Image (cartoon, rainbow, N blue to C red):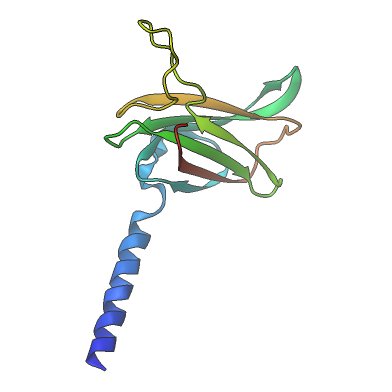
Length: 147
């Protein structure tokens, strides 16, 4: 009986510890410029340095766009996958970050598409056929294999 209580207390403490680390700790909330309610899901290797939503044009038609600043905070070169879900509109946008590898000046060959440790990049995702800024958004940043 004492062993069962100890295990239960240990599991609850562990769950509270994991729950406390999840969320928007990897987001620079000072640089979030979007009136929507945002739910964040970010891997520990990434940090969102900025986030904005705006009205814009896409293929000469009115649209909205999301601009995401992403930083590699790990010690290894990594590639990420970003998803922005418009919860109430049943739409989503996103892609791999970085999209392409950089060309080596000496060899002329393209390298793997990765963010180096400490490197920051900003990407823009337009949402076609949408002109009203959403009220709820979910932003997911996952790891992606670097081909």
